[in-house]
Image (cartoon, rainbow, N blue to C red; front, side):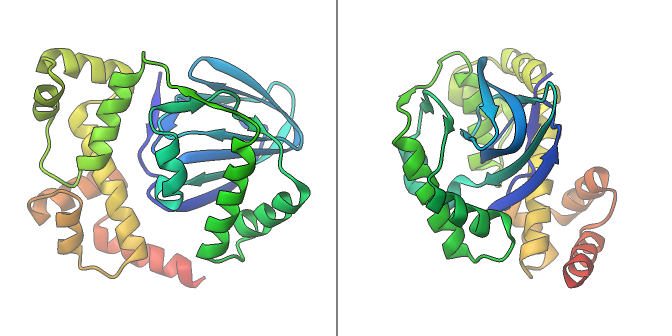
Length: 259
């Protein structure tokens, strides 16, 4: 079963994990893994990489990957948006990393630890540290053409991410790609394990959550920005997915921020 994580609209999120195991999934963001202690196995597009203590690994947007700890591991994860590093994002379009495992210089490790994982940095420090990290990574590997096999799935997901704020349907995507609606519907359900409509709504509502948490825009404006033509449809889907109203969600996030 392939999981798609559509909730990553924040520019940067960090986690600390122990003995992490996570099934095959993909998302629109970069994912940086740093193994602090132990070992971890990372499978990216059917390629297996062993990650040992002190090593870093970078997963590119929309790469199908899974994480396996066979004995013990303690790791730090940083998931960051392509919008954070647009220059690098352009470099890796339709490409992948021959070897995504890399080491960092002591100076870079110190900066990364402070800027990404301490919670005490600003936007410029985060962007600067990421570009330094990517610079050292690119010196240790080469860019290769991405595998052709998952292109259709990636294209569909990329298209949704680029156009979910517009009036789109699986039928319109099928016409754009030159596939029949029935074929694309079966293909999508088989690979993503959910219907196109449910997937689109979840993507829109997760984006709405991001806007509710990070802006003071009126809820009616947010509904429009997320691709909904009327507030009633927006509210109905929001309650279905998040089990609360948009107003309640915003109030809860404000309360948590003030703690």
